[in-house]
View: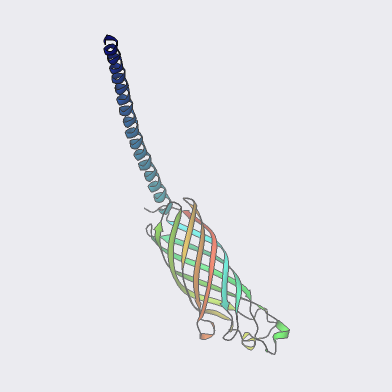
Length: 237
């Protein structure tokens, strides 16, 4: 009986010691977990502050200049098929604030017009090269400002020069079924810019757009896209 009670006392002491150590471990674990959560919150807050600074640095530039190349589907005459054209573009934007800017843009497009089948001059000229040069200006507005991307829309208006008989071997454009060459006809364009920011002052741009031209006194609905590099500089006050 004595041995049994002694053994019971020993077992009770061991159990108490185990419980105390377990409780201490749980308290320590809980403290570490709370500390980790606080550290996580602080890390997330630091990250958010860094992103906010990056966004501010990126979109507080006063000026943007951009340029590159692209593609356009253009209708060269009233009854001709649309032809594919390679384009270049250059623009400059002055930002009044982080979202609203005024853009001026120069574009150029080059392609081979498709002469009408059965045209008496078709065998002589084939598919001659044509070109158009729109000069336009208007507002640009940023809808989305993020650390890595920006999305904006633009609406531009101006004039376009058309050269439709420069490679026609002296045959007037209208005799080939093309629009007559002209120095200036109304033109306008609407579209969107998706900027992929490489640095706060440098981005790669993809810009699908609609271009409306009025050669020959009629409306041409032309669709295309532009790609190129954007460089930002200067600071808004």
